[in-house]
Length: 516
Ligand SMILES: Cc1cc2nc3c(=O)[nH]c(=O)nc-3n(C[C@H](O)[C@H](O)[C@H](O)COP(=O)(O)OP(=O)(O)OC[C@H]3O[C@@H](n4cnc5c(N)ncnc54)[C@H](O)[C@@H]3O)c2cc1C
Image 1 (cartoon, helix red, strand yellow):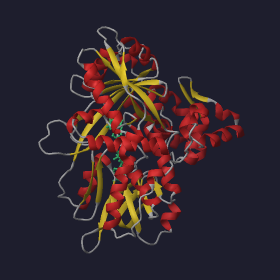
Image 2: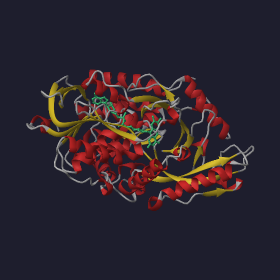
Image 3: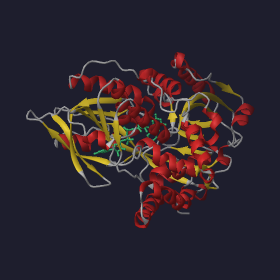
Image 4: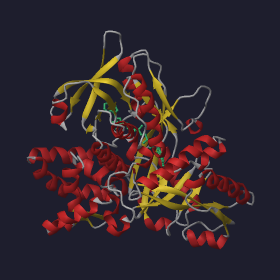
């Protein structure tokens, strides 16, 4: 890809800044229309918010209450398209809303029926009321005291960072060039003051370069204002960053195959407890923060709040000692006047064009990335006077597409790539060795990640190619040196480079471990 950049003498049709769901979505959309696209990500793909979500492809039951039916319908359609185009990475999941008060059953039952109806032909499953016994059958570890019954509805679940890696491959297969560890350090302008390219720096070599473009798209999520202000220092900030955290526990805390959805916690948020990769994921919070950082840290009050809220619903209340991993992410919410709390800010997206011609696509959510990209590319192509071409992503399959990937067991998230990973193992049986007894990952996945998924650091492998760091931070720390040993010959690391990698990983991983 570097060679393709060096040989590129004409301006790119489009340069996309940011390699999260938004930026990579834009790259897929533009490249599949036949535009010439370069995407630059300052860290790893998904290092930002896109690996730190609740991992739900959902319409957002909560937005029903805010009366935003259009937003819910749009997201439900996108949820259906995600399942259609990436069935190896997205699946449906039953969510049970437990009722402890007499009024809850009719109230939530009706809302969930509406939610199901709004999905139309993109529907997942039939929602219905559950008796007390049926509720406990689905959620055997639910607190029984005062339980009256429940309601079940269906939504989508996915592995966010894995989907993103497969989206990067999809963009590349459609002709885009995408690089991680290249930061856009500045925007350049033509004589009229229009953005006409980017200055960038390769993090690994320190090499700086300029790339010209007919249009530059800002897909930097919670960092959007920073890039906008590089084009126009006086640009009014548009992002209201808000942090959300998740705690991960052993699967025993949530026995069965259903998730719990609590529509109203004590601070008015939704709380989810979800089975994910053989563990229990509980979240989330909504804490306004002054500015986004790449490695946000969970605040003590957020941790206490999730533990206390989970304890109200789970038969065995989890404690700090039970936390296997804690992770935080920053919502790139678009500001609204006269709104007191970020919890009520719209999750709708905005395509904003600054006077400099920088196109920023902000807000939205993971589930709607495809629609956001379509909207953004339509506007960016008009601005850049690119030849008009229709969006083709509604039916575009995501790399690895496979309708029965479950047959690959713990490699199912790779879809068709699982076949190639098995072939890799056939050439060297030691690659079938697991990396840690607590997690299903095998050595072949590390080699595969370096050779085919652009993993450049130990953290890339343990946080986003596998999800070890998010599932069990201590196990990830214990796996790190084996991972570094496997990566070293692939990437030409000497002893010092390996030690540097391990030190960097330990420093990041310490944020995911809870002190007792
Ligand atoms: C706690 C939480 C839970 C959520 N749960 C869900 C959910 O269940 N379902 C759902 O649909 N949505 C969910 N969301 C929302 C969703 O995760 C986000 O909307 C989405 O991931 C945002 O993607 P993004 O690409 O805009 O931002 P990011 O993923 O943050 O990507 C932006 C990227 O830009 C890069 N960047 C910044 N500056 C530069 C530069 N100068 N040069 C190059 N690169 C740069 C960053 O490194 C980063 O990787 C959740 C969000 C949070 C915080």
